[in-house]
Image 1 (cartoon, helix red, strand yellow):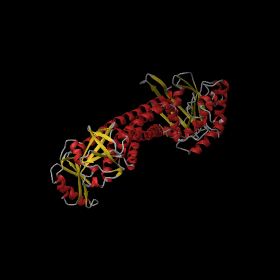
Image 2 (cartoon, rainbow over the protein chains, first blue to last red; image 1 turned 30 degrees about the horizontal axis):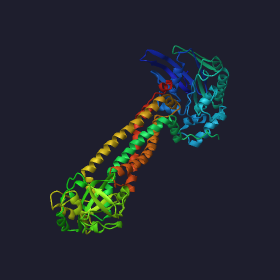
Image 3 (cartoon, rainbow over the protein chains, first blue to last red; image 1 turned 135 degrees about the horizontal axis):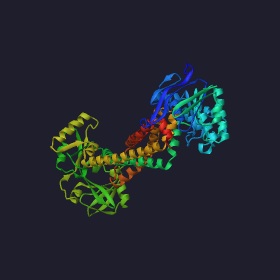
Image 4 (cartoon, one colour; image 1 turned 90 degrees about the vertical axis):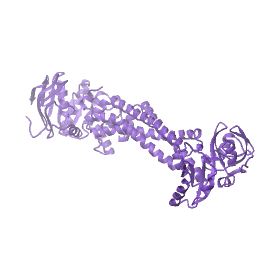
Length: 226
Length: 378
């Protein structure tokens, strides 16, 4: 399964909470190739979101290893650098900073890497790419759910990642907005050549992914590729 | 470009974070400002007394003063007037004058009242804006300009000092704050008024070569050898050695330190509350690749800016307070511009240190938050 062309390798990962009382992930192994698209699905509490957190280094496994872009078991600081470069994250509830405009929410992800004018220019280009350039000056509470998720997607692309991790990106959206966001993610994956891992409940998203990974009770119970 | 579609800069981000709770930021700023203001006003009082007294003798061309060793304050010094001749005979001394000085109730406040022998240089060189020098034994006095204005009295007017009537015969024309608040009379008259015949507070000494440090030291040593309890120094040194000034200085510093500690805690409290409320946002920053150092820098910068602005406000407020204290506690005390600038620099450095100290613990905690746990916070 894992190969030299894998951008992400999860190897026998276990994640426990409350001193082992809760096992969120149990011996999970998974590899994601460069430019591959994977949908991770399963019922509530199956461990999907915990898996995504571990893949992004937001949470560290109790045991097992995660390798990203050839870096095995990165340290917390290395994970931070990966999230500032190789990894982009799209959150279920958008996680935008409420006091910043749409364009500023994207700029804030580029602090320390680009100059202020470059940050501004790139933020506006990304908003153009996700189709809401006209909302650049709007604050999150002034945006619809679909627009917020587009800002979140634009922010995840700010540092030109190779791996995009999306945690239930459509679950807080109505059917129409959800479909539009799914279209956008799949388009971006194709045009930018990204590896895309989408954690989803949505059967329509799953149907459009060439590979699906099913989870239950913290374990991978199916891994099907077309 | 829309008005709100602007480049987001680091200072802009800091300002945006502080302004999300403008009331709290303002009160914290005020807390720092009051702490710094108390430092500026209180520590300035002692410095003002020292510098004012130094300037008062400089203006009259006095190089050294001879005082009793270990005096509590200048007014309490007690030396025999007869010592003047012995001082005059010491090598390097060009002129000497005894001086008796005290503070007496006057009008609604107090006046520094000084007595000089009528045939000595301070009296002979007395600068008058109008009127004439007071004559010995005639119940006459010259008032400083500020004192005359405060009491609304001019030449020919009558005043009361220590329950005795005096006629104002002149208004002096000095620049120094102490001298402008001083009442001058012949030494014998003041000795009689205070029932201290033959006693003076100090001797003012002029030197042949005031710029020659070695000669000055030799003269000082010679004068100090006259009596075991004599201290010879510049006025500034004498004021610094004064127990009263030292007491004012140390109690001012103690009060200032308490105020500064409260200012520091106020920054800590504000930043800690801010970090607590923004835990999720800090988690978002960590999730999008902000390093611990950058998160630490953000919170520290917010504390730094808050304290910096508070420091500036505090310095301005402190100067106002200093003016009030000087006019109500120590009339005539004054600070020169360079001292005020160096004091402002010191106060601003303290304010910034307060901000950094107060913000450090919350900033450190914020930078150590686990991203996943922070993102789970609502």
